[in-house]
Length: 111
Image (cartoon, rainbow, N blue to C red):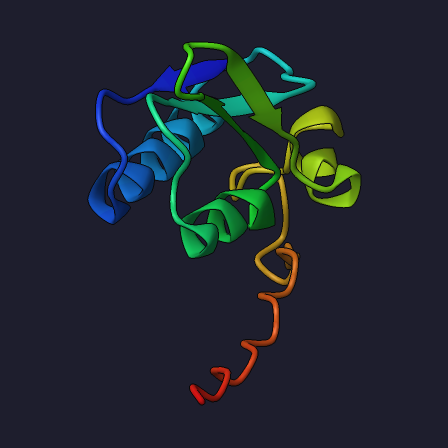
């Protein structure tokens, strides 16, 4: 499944993430790969955010060729595994754990 955006900014990346989560939650289709498509490379932090949820990033380069930046395989398992149980079929004590957010690196010094 691919969600395409016409611009590359943080708001559009967040929009792509939300729409992908909504599509995957409201369908019976089992996806093996989900992708956010952008006209240019998103910011590094935005790519990391999408990768945290197992979403690949696909973008065009300056000559128009497409490049895929795949999410880590472990994060992608959320899309390819058995669907998450719903509250109607699962006791309220069931917890779902998302991948951990990467530890932020301290900013580098400017000489």
